[in-house]
Length: 149
Length: 236
Image 1 (tube, rainbow over the protein chains, first blue to last red):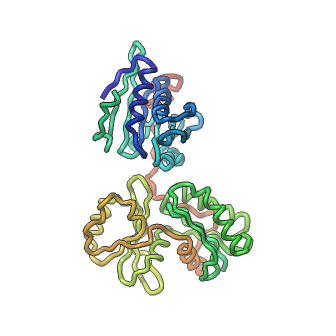
Image 2: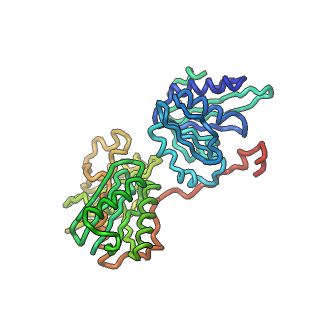
Image 3: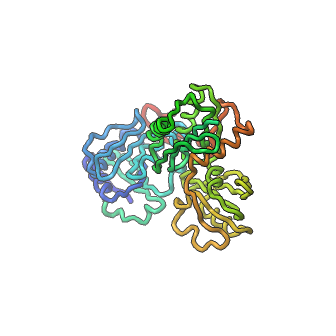
């Protein structure tokens, strides 16, 4: 499924709608180059989860935790990691079992992650429109994502 | 001998202070995370109860896995700290050994199971013998469906113990020759018993050579060259 987002507000709105469908233990991978809106998307998702804190990029600290929402959010950026074991060392999947784990650049580790996850590819068109391609796998394939569009 | 046992390789974390065959104090907590916040206060509590200080110890026993990656590391790091500070040896013990010892069955083959996450389980088999158990197969990673097939083709009566509660629902339904038993997690008191045997027989490596048993797949290097096609990192 593809969703066209001409503006940043559109991207955030998609994320907010997705947030309403999330359950504890959900894993979301965000894929796309620098500046496509992965962190912006996570900000919208956090807002949809009722998280009050400001969402900051996890690129430097690798992992940020937000606990003020309906579900805890674990926000990860694996861009600076070199191996799958380094990801395991962060223990984000253990820390996130009660909540939602969002992994920026998660496509790099997709084969190492649990099969049940939603991958979202961000593609930038010439006019700046972001196209969000939702790629559900495992049990995500049975979920109704129609509400998100 | 005076021994501190540290057990943090599964969601069931525990510590125990034992003197010879007697458990003097123990503390435990079931929690899949947060072993680091449990462990040191629990050790302090046990020392307080018994009235010892760490300098009273002859050795520290620690579960080196298989089990939870971070839990094992928390336990091993704490044991190494105590060993270095007080000049005592570390007695490493295997999680499935401690589970099997507590299962205590007279005649059934014991299948021990530890959840190592990612849908895989460490499984080791033990033969009951008078006074204890003998490992019949070393821990290996097994997926639940494969384990079920192994249990179905078992040629002798068995008892499966350990974290069977983490299996997919219904995995053990309709087993014929194998019963499901306890304990679910290894316990520091049983770990101490395993370690005591090793200590008395002088069967333990130097503290600097203790290595956890993760049973993990070989590490995978992330292929960034395919992904970083744009921006200042291109070609990196």
